[in-house]
Length: 264
Image (tube, rainbow, N blue to C red; front, top):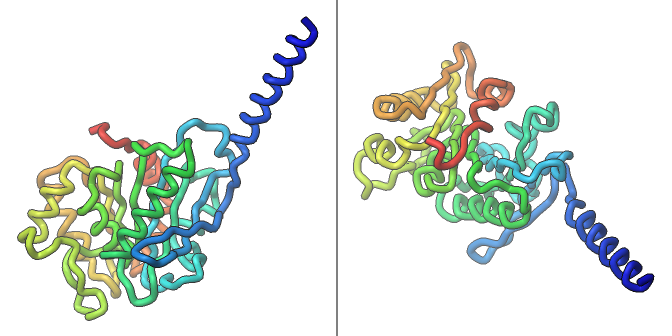
């Protein structure tokens, strides 16, 4: 009897230890890498300090702007969503993924595919990640990238929040890749066909001198004409930096984290 009792105690101890080990997940901003098209890309993942307290966490994919491109794996966390998280982490109950595009590249083609690969790798790594609550947001070049990824993979995202982005070509020759490929027809009708059922909140500064507000006004008008899932905020008097105001908005965060794939 004693041997049986001891055996049960040991088995229980092993199970408890395994459970404790399973819950020991590193938190904060963590270095990660992903391979795509024969290249290795560094990215960051943010894991909330209280990760172990919940069985399901939403996941947010953030796409940075042109000034954060490179290979250091860190610069993309210096502007936009990551600083907002560092300042008030309690406002962001989400795992967040921060890929980094190569210098001179846009969030198109291989770079967009790499960002999606980093997201999928994160969903596989963190068992508490909720695949039905995956959000996409980005600023400037990343706003354009948010449209680009959402257009090609609307089934992945529960909500999308492009900030000071654009759909068609900008005048700057370095930013000539349109969101909608020419073979899909006129950009706005094609965008509506793909994204009319996706919850989207678009943001732009009224005085933006880098990306004209029309870059957001046009898709907002086209989508709002056929969808109740789309909102548009234009900040009066703001120039290009409309992201700090967006990520500081409690109303926006409540909306974002309430979205769930298949809910509408």
